[in-house]
Image (cartoon, rainbow, N blue to C red):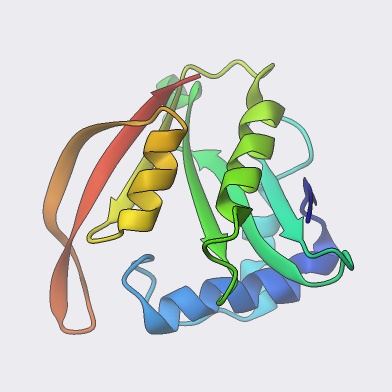
Length: 165
């Protein structure tokens, strides 16, 4: 497995991975799938440097994308500039092999020299695998937004975690 910054050529595969979660899970609260062109602004908002990054894990052949991790703006107001929201999405079937761990390690290594103070992660509940991953990286639970999102005809809670950077 290799981990590297995401590039424009990854857009189709990254969109496919994300759309799986849109269609099949409450992990994202998006409810309509995206085309790659609709996702292009998202990709472009994650350059190879700076606080907002996109890291991609590929298989041994360097062609199949196994997943990705991002750091994005936490909120749009300037005072939040030293905070990021982080997330990991894995391709179907890529879980349980350390892909998420490798992605987060690369992401946090890349962010180490940035002017950042905190990372936040919102985890739709239940999601034990994501909770374990975040806790392994030193995130601590800070609270839950109860029934904050409605998808698939029901309401979902989101647990929030934070990590000092």
